[in-house]
Image 1 (cartoon, rainbow, N blue to C red):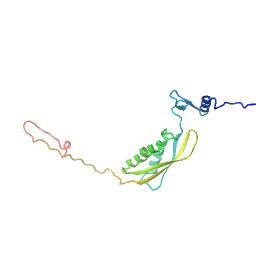
Image 2 (cartoon, rainbow, N blue to C red):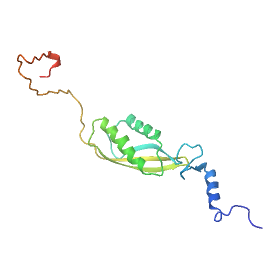
Image 3 (cartoon, rainbow, N blue to C red):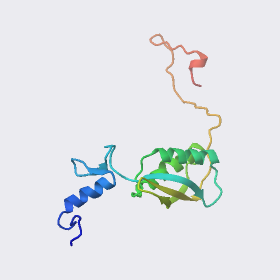
Image 4 (tube, helix red, strand yellow):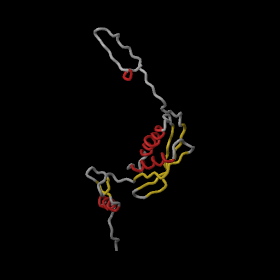
Length: 166
């Protein structure tokens, strides 16, 4: 007696459709795989669990928690490595720049700590090579050197003290 089932070698398209239905996926008109709900390409979402630094840094815990929260709002593909570059530049570097560290030199690496078919959880390890000097805004005074024409009968120039720059 022969076993009942599909011969996957003879019917590859049927086997592919069966596999896609099992995983709740479909092929759209462009030939791309997407979820059955039609919400875009099917991929495992990145979840950043923790960000760890290899040395003490000038970011507060609340700043790091905000970076994690913002990162988890993105729909990054866990199978792509591009998300870690975006997190490094947009999330981490901008947090230091908000604190006045514009010459920050850092690198970040992601390590998977588990997941399932929908999500992949990551630990992000950050190496800070140099935070650089902190710049801050103190009193800012702008002075503009400007030459004014000498008043004569053709021109008149009236300037109140609060409107003119000396």
